[in-house]
Amino acid sequence: MKKKITIILALSALFTLTCFTVFLLHSKDASLVFPSLPQQVVKGSRSVFGKMMDHIRVKKIPDVSRKTAATSAQPAPPLDPCPDSPLSLVGPLLVEFETIRSLQWVRNQLGSVLQQGGRHKPPDCTARQKVAVIIPFRNRYEHLTHWLYYLHPVLMRQQLDYGVYVINQDGDGAFNRAKLMNIGFVEALKEYDYDCFVFSDVDLVPIDDRNLYRCSDHPRHLSVAIDKFNYRLSSVTAFGGVSLLTEEQFLKVNGFSNTFWGWGGEDDDLYNRIIVRGMSITRPDAGIAKYKMIKHGRDLHNEVNPENAVKTKKTAENIETDGLNSLNFTVKEILKDVLFTLISVDVQAP
Ligand code: UDH
Ligand code: MN
Image (cartoon, rainbow, N blue to C red; front, side, top):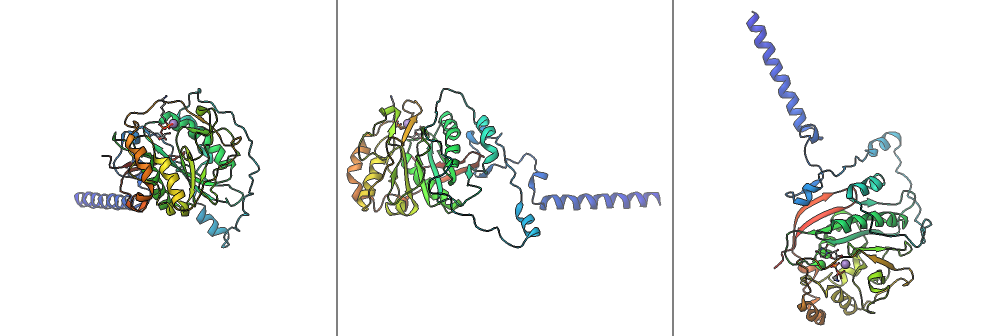
């Protein structure tokens, strides 16, 4: 009899344990089962950079949808459009890169007001534009930290509905800034209905927040006056550094060329594409469109490529077949930091 009871008890304990395991495995919150699951990894295998980012704070976004449904069936009334001239702009800014800033310190400063992936929108009005900031990147962590520290508050004051996309070239093949920009455009659009694209170097920080990161009727060049060039525009056709195009404008020029490997030419080629497609460029006033460039030398695997200058003479021949419509790449990894979305890509360097 005693033996029978023991067997029954053992069997029921086994049954309870099995049920509990099945429940956990089907639970939505996988972290209950796998507490060490790296939640910030969205896709693919983990790079060295991914491992470095393991301490990323994954911000919990409260589930307000259910609460709203319970309290009222009415959706919130739409907010008024934000003013054309944002009211909280301050004008000239103090910008310096001597202070040592860590990514974690910047997260501590700004993380609480941002949404995962480096997103933000004005809480009290509807932004005039949905802006994706695309940054071509490889091994410039220090620059990225300064950039994030200064740009997030500026973009917030400018009342944009924006997201920051760092497009990291995987491997050490020849750098291709232009192709990374095209990839950023395609990948950002998969995520949100952006209507304006800022293509910005990681080392350019505006020193006046009246320089609005907003698109206009024609493609727009923002980095007019850079300290490195004594705050003077290098040429009337300059279009590198920080430039903005709407989705429509970027599609019209078939994006950047994908074939500018190494340093130089891709920005002039984009300028030519704009002219070939019957548009012109606009710029803010040089007294406002001022920038500091973080000091740096030339990077490894981004040497000047003399073939690039030759290619800028052939824009009209190439625009039809070289660009967004011929873009090939592989996404290796997508990381969601609170300060930015990092997309590591294989650009198929030669
Ligand atoms: N970039 C990287 N990693 C690289 C190369 C380029 O992230 O290895 C990105 C980054 O966003 C950078 C942009 O590509 O801001 C443009 O590259 P750059 O900053 O090298 O271009 P710039 O015209 O450089 O500023 C000119 C070479 C400076 C040499 C100065 C020697 N006195
Ligand atoms: Mn630079």
